[in-house]
Length: 155
Image: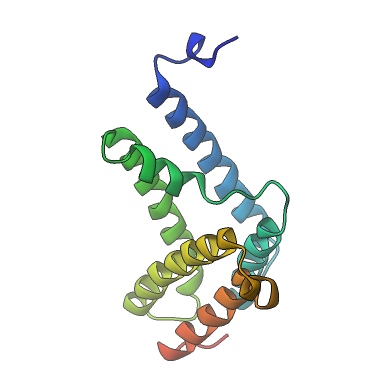
């Protein structure tokens, strides 16, 4: 059995998977933050979600980043889908951060949070001794709090 029976080509298959994962992931984030009242609780829930994902046997890094590196140069559609996902993640963080920061700092810190998450994913994939002692998801949460405070926010 081949997946190409259902998809025109490899690009179409990858795009379908990325769209499905984007939907599932954004639903997960909405669900884990839905019952949280404060920005601190919401943000902690997100970073804890990543931390728990990093410790799963099924963790193999970010498929959006992998797809972008492997096919982004040759596939504008895959590049656009990966960019869309990062934009949604940025908007998600920005919307939470607007509770504790003015709009411009909220937008800036939201981008930094996306970068912190990307860095934590890469660090976790390296599986260094430091990652076992100082987990990247926990470290990213500490850095996120410092960024918010540095921009005049409170948690």
